[in-house]
Length: 183
Figure 1 (tube, rainbow, N blue to C red):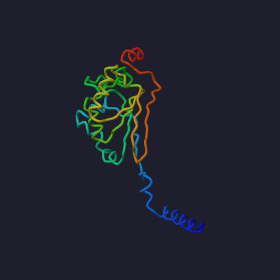
Figure 2: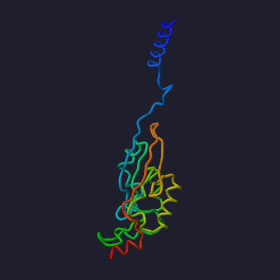
Figure 3: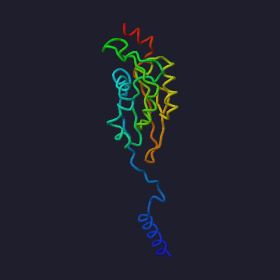
Figure 4: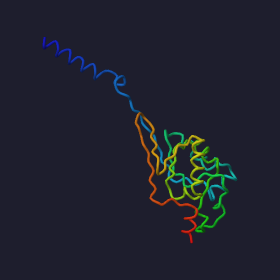
């Protein structure tokens, strides 16, 4: 009887190793994630957008961006309906470092497969809390997720849970603090 049990056990182990494991275990696929760094849509980039269309800045990379499951960038300023104060400024002038991006920026991001942005940076507060709130509103309406100092973004890619956090080493820069630091 022991021989029968041993033969059955060996047979079951052998069948297990030759069976399609996807029945028992989830097959993970490759996750393609791209970090693009700082994205700035003011100053000269804003002028180009006005002259050639907002999509122009992505025209040579948009097909590349579509090849990824998740594209993440650092949104280097707020999205507001305010007029730009840095568009025609000279380098090193105080307003040259105070950004606001056009209100359709979030729609352009999602159109080019950028689905997650970091807001934890030194320019997100350039238009105060109103600018931060406006940015979050435009991103949410367009379907672009964001991370900041108080949020975590969790998603599943390739069968794996992946989490993203934001860290901002700099104190939040409000317009009032910015103007004081520029003097």
